[in-house]
Length: 139
Image: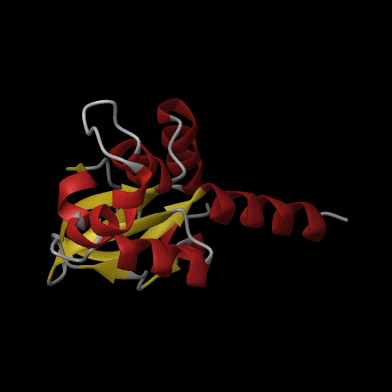
């Protein structure tokens, strides 16, 4: 049986809670990620998604002129726009169960946590890559 540990991305890019959103966006672009984990040491605090950033920047509750975006990007932190306490999976979770959780919750990824420490992240791309590999092996 295929497990999360077999297909996850180990040691994913992480940021501290006080990391400016501008830096988070830079990491997302440079690594082609849509999610970045927010940690304190190895302890998971939350996850920042591209959607979280779009919502924070375009919130109807934050009235600002577009010229202020640069200031907002610098002053807004990962902690301020992250999703707190995200659903996680363990490395020994089956890949099928992880895929079902991603689908059911419409997530792009989930942190992989073992003994309270972040060890990886599993994404829909990881699931699709494993599926493509399985199909290739069957031919």
